[in-house]
Length: 290
Ligand code: HEC
Ligand code: HEC
Image 1 (cartoon, rainbow, N blue to C red):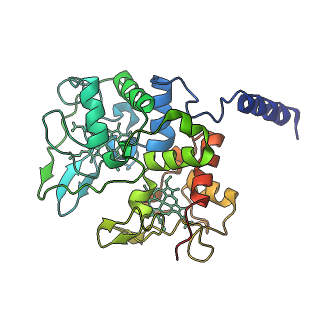
Image 2 (cartoon, helix red, strand yellow; image 1 turned 135 degrees about the vertical axis):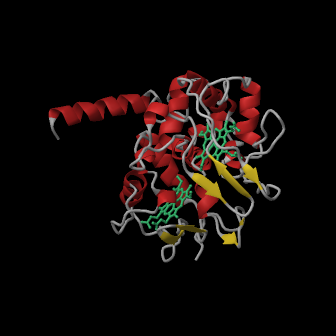
């Protein structure tokens, strides 16, 4: 080990000992920094809410001012909303309470319901401190005036309750790695795609991690894989390093470029080592399903 690497290890050790590297709030509760960490490392709001430039990359100069991508199902046709503090076209005129209610229940201040493309059913499990942090972060963004095409709703929204999000988690619980990992997986809405599905209906309770939801796009169809601890069908025989590499690079274990819905490496690589280990600890506990 080089001297620098050794010092790095010592510093990491000290941070761990002080609980800083692994604590649920590596940043102060209700802070812009904690909100930025959640958005940049775990929740990836940008993938749906930041407009894309001509080459398909995110245009961060107009960050979170409304996506250019369309979400279309038989039930709706929507675009990621403008969530910058612009008063006219964004959420600048919303109160904190309005914003929290929308984020966690999918109901806008005017009573209308968001399409489920927005993962609010998962965000309902956010701790009060983290919810404050997300709001603080959104308020810190430069306002961008950008009117996003109005949503079209064709059928009533069906919201499937997500287990574990019935009430906000107690922040103190999150010192336990498996619980913190489950919490991070909820914020990253892994089960939205990886729970077993019967038709379009997710079986969150009976088949967590079983996989099978199919995503169709211009490039063809791809199914979310089994991420349970099954050694034959799932990731039970993967090493922790295998899982980390897949999550932080967007490349499959076999080296293939992962399809769009799973291409989150640019975000997950920003997770603290403690949070990444916690996420893996949670995945290891998913009962094997074949
Ligand atoms: C997988 C895509 C996706 C992700 C990830 C996502 N959103 Fe959304 N969000 C949407 C879509 C699509 C809409 C618009 C839904 C509609 O019009 O019915 C929306 C709507 C919203 C709204 C309502 C705004 C309005 O004017 O109606 C807020 C607030 C919001 N999102 C905040 C966030 C935040 C904060 C994050 C990250 C913590 C986030 N979203 C992550 C897709 C997403
Ligand atoms: C929006 C849907 C979606 C979300 C959210 C999602 N995944 Fe995936 N995931 C997929 C799809 C689709 C694939 C298959 C991609 C492919 O084969 O190209 C996949 C593949 C994987 C793989 C296997 C890679 C390989 O080498 O075969 C792992 C492991 C994985 N996801 C873990 C996770 C974890 C952990 C989370 C949450 C932190 C998560 N996923 C969130 C859709 C998603």
